[in-house]
Length: 80
Length: 417
Image (cartoon, rainbow over all chains, first blue to last red; front, side, top):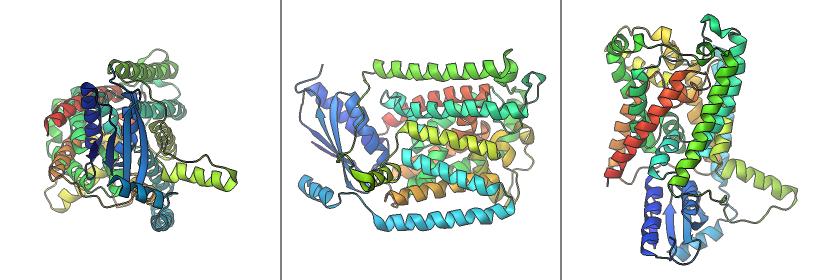
């Protein structure tokens, strides 16, 4: 699933990412989530929060002002 | 879409944006040159201007954000950014105590160190803190946060600063009522004077308070189901050789973001140096000076504001004449420093919000912050980040009220679709 949060300012992109993680966890969905944001604060926050929620995060800079963050459950299968 | 993005990533790696770096160097040179111009008015303004720039640079690099420090406690159950503030307060508390000790070696005789941010504490502090907390969450940044984001090109943050100036102007018309009703009856409680142990006890209590907040933050994260993540890094190779190591160092300082703890430490040292040079760090004074100039030049000024000259903190500075003052140096220097940082990182961009209502939110949030910082004699910087290390009880009360306001702000934010 891809969340395009470009043009949205902190904290909305982080909020969308965290909500998506929580919904995916509730469904037991183990697919990767891709978040695109041009807000630097959120680009820094999302990997931290995702990891704190049991996801691995890979952040790539698409541009000086744009990041693509790939999130995946750290352990396969639904997290309790 | 994803493959196109991946192609762009590989095309741009290693990350370099030379044109903005050149602009950054030019602005930096001009700004350093300007320190000589401003220093001609009063010598102290030159170092204050440079320190203001350093503060802005550190704020931009670490995206230090008082608003998110408090907000994220309630929005995400996270205390990571709050810990950056605690690091800054640890440094300033120790340093401020040394400076104040030089000025007032015997605190028990009732004299307060002249420039320290020891503010009246009472209901006005609570009302100001709660209102400011709501405002900064709605605006998406506090006063210093909105100022440095202006330097990065965030248009909505400029609207928030405008809102703050308006809010400060509005408060001025009602100040005398607040003064007579609340503020004049509120004591300035200085821990070094109030505690029998003097400075030693006051510093120990303050540090214990910071530690307690840190542990409470950890507990709160655990309770919210967060565990400490390992540090995430952007993909890249380990540097090899002197050139590569220098390049990696350059990237870490100028291109990649700093962690909140590093930002807090640099901001703490900067605030300490500002106090050594002249006065503690504050940004509200300059904004309220703008509001005053605007209303008096239109001949609709609020008239005499009672009690302000006896209060200190950010209030004491708002009546200074001329354009180039200490508050100008720090506040405008901050925006310029943030601009330099953004340019070196290639991150400067005029950013118009995608959602129209962001403007309204920023303006309203700014208004609330301005009004509140007028009432509480300072914002997250002046009444909090510079007040706690001044060993003032007002700093803790304002901080607690900020947290309460941020909680309320989050409740409001979650109702906005």
